[in-house]
Image (cartoon, rainbow, N blue to C red):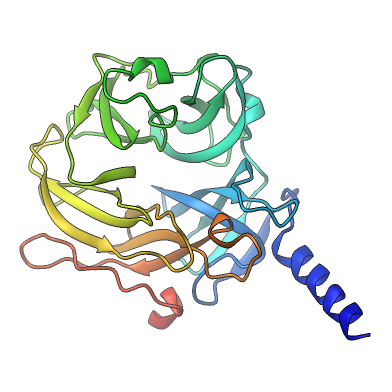
Length: 326
């Protein structure tokens, strides 16, 4: 009887935390500390502030079985106008939208330009070895998104000068500078950047390396008071470090660790945004109990603060999260 009850308990926990359903209608919830989403696993957060809302984009760590590997087959989108009450919307994009890809919905970012929304994603290429970067486009931050090119914008054979691994072309982030020039930044073990044409779907120059201390992956650019901040995952298990510069072209000066290892997660992937006058650090950890360990991650949000000299204060990861400020 005890074994039967334990088996039933395991099944209930599995069904609760390992669901793979796709949202078919909007689902609204109020956060209760960290992680902010507790009914499914979410990872590799990116955020877009547009109008009076924040749009949170994430991968969905699924678990069709208690396997120790990443199973990520779709991207998710959530929105909020106060960082506390969130709505999950219908799945806006899957790797199937890219006919040239064979799957895997790895880290991504959405950016707006001229009323269009461009989603840069990491997928496994169908014919070229390794990971590639695609770009989808929509008229709305909630989608639906469609392939904007019909081909990858970055493929593994474009960066063999710097590394021979098949997964260095991942984790795209995009920055539009004050002069209107857009840049694509990405990488694993080596960070790269390249200019984008105004159409946001073509490179406008050579791929250039960015030399950063102990770079692993997950670059993110933001700007404040004339300083450019390039944060990224370093080491393994990963911490978030960051560098600062007065120019998007560098040179970049390393400023230290921003976020320590996020409990029970080998990876550490961040988004940094300003919303209604406050700064937020969005990341994932492995706080929800799971047989998948580090392969089942959950998005968290904590406040970000600056020192008088412009450097960022080290993030205090909390269980209370934003609810501590209510």
